[in-house]
Length: 119
View 1 (cartoon, rainbow, N blue to C red):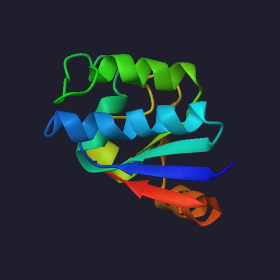
View 2 (view 1 turned 120 degrees about the vertical axis):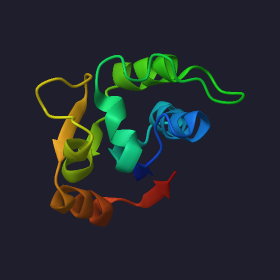
View 3 (view 1 turned 180 degrees about the horizontal axis):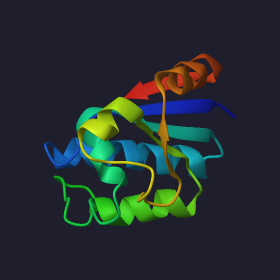
View 4 (view 1 turned 45 degrees about the horizontal axis):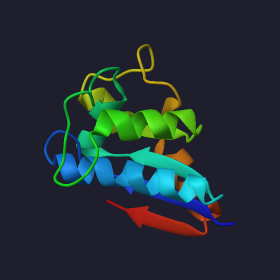
């Protein structure tokens, strides 16, 4: 099976594109692939508990439901440190499976991945 890195940059600014990375992560994980989600930009705000509760995109399940499934599957969710800090997110209050990570962590994950999907 493949090792997949999913990069995401949308949050409340685009509910559909905020949800699609998690749908992809869930699908890949249930197919047996190793998956990590790396959040950039506005997507980093979604690692706060409750931040995804009211996000519903077009023709997709509510983000809180998809996110709960991804968390239950144990998929790591990494948030860019600089992006997160700029949005007032720190490691003291995160959803399960979420961590604040450095650029070096992203590059290492990218190098080790078979595929990188970007949303």
